Structure formats: structure tokens, C-alpha cells
Image (cartoon, rainbow over all chains, first blue to last red; front, side):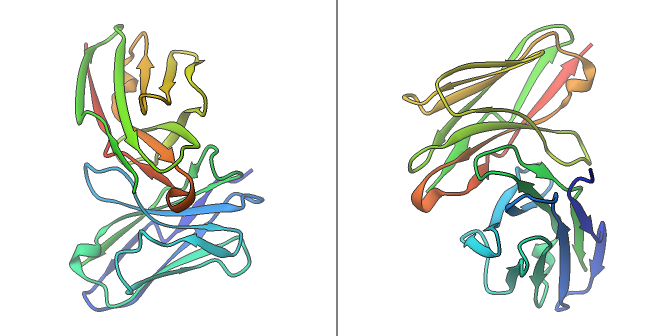
Length: 113
Length: 111
């Protein structure tokens, strides 16, 4: 009965480095979303998956950001050449249906120095 | 594209009732959701409206008017623990077939 888990919980990296953020959704949930949240703001849509395919990646800021979900379960958000402006909490959510309740993970706080 | 508007802050007194409004713009419409987020925590689901009308869940109710592209969250018998940020979220259709969130309403509760 585990919920959505995300690792690491905190990541500190230097400008220019590569990072991977992992999301383990609730078992059986076909829809998986990635959001980015800055202090005082709402979750900002990045990308969502329906099964293994990225159904909509229109929220990815630029080509430094990429996400995969190869087996339709765990997803990894990859950020290349990190910039200070990438610092935020990255949230993952999963749901059993596209329009249904989303269950959020605790987030990964990314700090780029 | 999709957009949502909600007040940035609302203040109310413990025990009172407060309404948080949300207007949205989207291509097609699947439903409007509400989430609560305490400081340092993850958003948690409160309610979902796909059809016009009022949905009640305990002290929280949510209303939707599709013709007005408008909804609200009603919180009754406010408790100090209700101090949090509240987000409306909408899913559209076609090009807007994804869930996006508003910027959130910070609810301050006074004793």
C-alpha cells in the first residue's frame, strides 16, 4: 500500500552538472505527471505519461530536460547542464485515470549552486 | 492554452466559512479539482467536479459552473489546521489534455 515515492529527497549539485530524479508511482497507475514548484507558486506542469509514452511534454522548459518511463512504471526526470534557475521542488504524481485524483510524492528539492 | 485564476491570499476567522474562487480557460473540459498543500508538504487531493453543481465532502464543498468556467471551494467550520495553500487544477481536451494547476490561494486563519 505504498504511495508515490521520489528519490532523492534532496539534491545539491553544481551548475553545469547532470542530475536524475526518480519517481516510483503507485502500482497500477497508468498516468504519471512531473511538476516543478517554486516557493509560493503552484505546481508547474512539465510532462505527463500515459503508460510508457510521453503523452504531452509541452511543459519541459528546454531540451536540457528529458523524462523517460521505459516500462510504464518508474519514471526518471533527467536534467543536463543544470542552471541555478532549475532550483525548485520537483514533484511527481500518479493517477489511475487521466482526470482522476492525483497522488503526489514528497518531491525532490533540487538546489543548483 | 490553459489558464486558471484564483486569489493569492484569503484571511478568515476560526469557525467561520470561507470561499475560494477559481476561473479557468481551457480547450474542452474534463473536470476541476482542488488540492490542499501545507508548508513543506505535497499537494493532497480534496475534491473533483466534472459536472455542474455542488459536491460535498465533510467540511469541504466544491462547486462548478461549466457555462461560466468557474468553480469554488467552500470550507466550513474553519480550523487552524486548515491554514494552507489551496490549488484549483483543470484538465482540458485535445491540445490541453493535461492537468495544470493555478498559482494557489494562501488561506490564513485567525483565532
